[in-house]
Length: 623
Figure 1 (cartoon, helix red, strand yellow):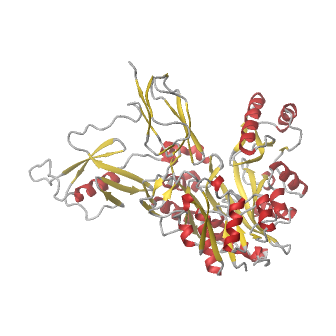
Figure 2: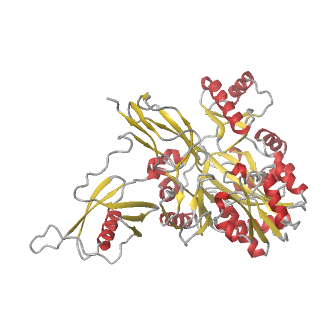
Figure 3: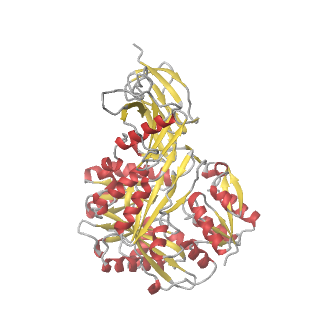
């Protein structure tokens, strides 16, 4: 077994790898950026080394810094985790050239699967079904348009070096093709430095099915069955499960066999995932499932496979990298029940899923399910990295049992003041169509209003807040509304998100509220269903607040960087005109004028870092 391991990653995957290292007696070595100095994974490792400033491009993406940390620590091997340099063949080669063990596939396999068009050509030669389309080298607009007509519409234009939904366009008609092609090429060139594209048939009612594979250096390759990752938003996975619901035995056998063919075609070693797209307009059929791409690393969603197989995939990675044969044969790997994973993001679904950052004054995850978290209470969520702060994984004897457990767990999440998507996840898991496995990659977009739920507090939340405020007073609030032979009443006036509420309570009040409540100074927090509601008392002369932006104050909706400013003091702008562009957590947002007016005050500039709620500029009507 490898004696020591440097983990070239951060957050929850670093903590996950450290847990297995400790169980196996492997010395775990962490690396961290300045932003992660106080992160849990740094403390939990046997030793840790600073590798650079907070931005990933100056720390986690600098191969030389990682290799220097490995040299200083005496590490025997490097585990890349996922993201960052995990699928970078050049980095893998540098690790091996430095005399270290690379816990991953051979660089040649990474390179073979790195470009979509080359990988699909290789898979077709290996007998793996690939999506009908065009993978040719002739990238002239005329050839691509002719091939598009041959394939038929709708179709997808995809960057050959793409990922994460970038460089991808759905085209419904030939008349739209030329403009979509130009746009896709520009985005691909900007994001990946490669404007080449491929064309493929658009699958109707598509589902994202992937198969976990494992290979060793002795020629053994097995699959650990499939996962369904169809619930996505902006091409990013949100909920994953194993096995895929509604998967017939013969279709499972066919797709798993195709995955093994794909892995054998590149003599694969270590953990990998073969991703397929399924056209489910006529149900899950073996002749409608096509190879999409291969991820040559461990996946974020690997815990659901661990849950249904009872295996530790990180342990398998370390054993294979140490030169051992796979621990089990194919016939010894069995499915056990059903598992579902939900990704908890630091984002606010009520504001279009804008990222949320800041100090975690309250951070509570339920103990009823497996929780792989990147952070802890008192820690900081920064704008430097991906907004996923935890994964919640439930396992049960049936899909319905796992669904119930995970939905309840998401509803028990308590985080403040950072916003999360916990309530959104709970609503999704409880949705009738999802429970019935009527799902595809467009599920979230199709059902979004129902999945968001209402941001307004309901009656139990209001009563819990009112009871907490009454209990917080040194002496009870005066009783109001006396009537002969009628019980006394207490009226409490509270504000939540700018809305006023009057709650009438009748003593005696319960000793404790039915919902989790946290009081801090003049503010009362009530947690319900994954949401948090912040209440303050309204005094008799308080008239409340007007709608945001109506007073001309343009505030930062999230912490981040100002990329550009389109105005200057004294400039008159039209309603809806762009004022400035902000960026945080890989997301850009344009702030626009709420009314026609004049820029009376400008408090920021391009390149400035701003906090959430900071006053960026002020507009006046100029009348």
